[in-house]
Length: 226
Image 1 (spheres, helix red, strand yellow):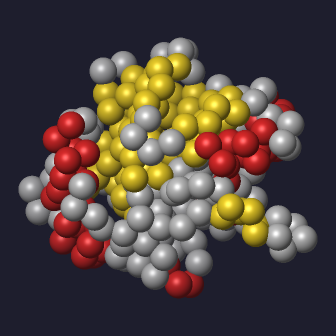
Image 2 (cartoon, rainbow, N blue to C red):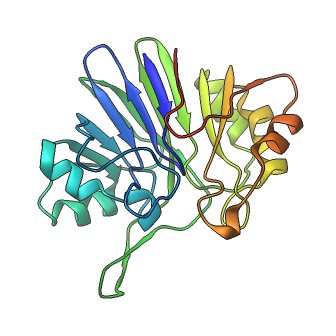
């Protein structure tokens, strides 16, 4: 399995036969190395409805007929845009041909702002547990620190945890370091930082705060084998 990070909260997972893209915010993302035209995933997973996470989902899904898996209200809204969706909710899991997806709680908000400035309610924000080829990846989405992270880590031993560190809208480095302690992953990777001025952070601060767990700080396009 190959895992790569592409700026903000974009994560790409390549298994033996499938490509999974999480939160594909490409257009307007100054940090990403991806192009909308270049992405042809089999599935797109979304943590919540904010525009900097839904991103280019509709354009990508229409171009390559990808299945979009999202919190139910968000899945319904995106389905109205003419793409294939599968709605889920917090605590639910579903097995797909490319792996198992389970949505966890996240403490944040979730809405989509249309081009004419209408705000669409898109259900509860979530984190995602993705399991394939005997490995489990946790994408925390946008969230604050919460105590049930410990339970998530105990119930689902995590190989890689992607955790936001940007502060202002999500956890900052200090809370994210505590989140890693609770989740107890084999590897932690910081996300959701430096895209906009309110979330500018030095990821090395986060690395220094994490004790007893490996941390990788990835530039856009950085990848590794799991």
